[in-house]
Image (cartoon, rainbow, N blue to C red; front, side):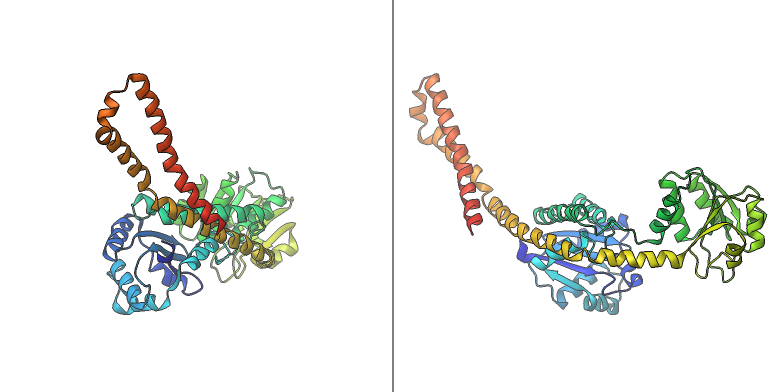
Length: 408
């Protein structure tokens, strides 16, 4: 089966995120479309992996994965695509086959093929993709074996290397900065802007125990949606200059071309408080007027500072790639042996049934008249002997075959 194992991959290496997005399939439609693909192209097994910046098709097939196959693949799976789109994806696909495909999925789950090296989320995404495909009856024994080895290898990578120890995302870095400042969990946090970055940041803080949120946004409905999720209060961005309940931390990220938090607005927000405040400004250009830092006791964490830390941490993670590759090389060696053993096990599945058939024929046909003459005690002893020999005839050939493989 290894010789028929393939992966078609679309990642940040060969396509833009918007193009990859066209290959995503809604959850409710996956079973119908993927089952049809498997049946139409006579695929033996199939697994579908889809993330925000990656779509991969893991499958076993007897056919050669040439342009004609790829063209049929995408035309079948995406009937709404034009012939130009089908041709585009067929031309731009990265295709891995045989042991190279195994190495690829190991690298993916170990995050060294990711856009952000060391992001642990991919191991969960691979596992969930397998479970989902298995639930749809798309996978089989070989992909099960591959994914088991993949998950075990990824766990080893994250345990034995430092590939994921230093955070690189703006959200996680900002959180670590707050944590290092010993900000209490009941700190009053103002969220200025309800876009994707601030939404992720505030949810991350709530996950880690922070609980006192107020959200400001130009569109009040969006502020209300996020505030409801955070169990906080929502206001229009216009209300920021009139807010009187004080704050300990401001997290701001808007698309404004001018400073949102001017010295006048900041003075109003302080409400006469003199203790040091924290402002995490993830906006470009920044939302906090530089004069605020000159006039007030404030710890300012800018996106530029966070990006410098991120770049340094990425360099540190990259140093671990060689160690990860060594673990993957060892995993590939182990997988080759496991695959050979599994091939023997599958080939010898019929041995137990054949042995049972021989026993049935001997007892009920060939030696039936002789056995009828035996007393109960003798028959019991004979049954034990036959049962013992039956088990040995099942296990010994399997052990011998595995020993031969091991010697090779």
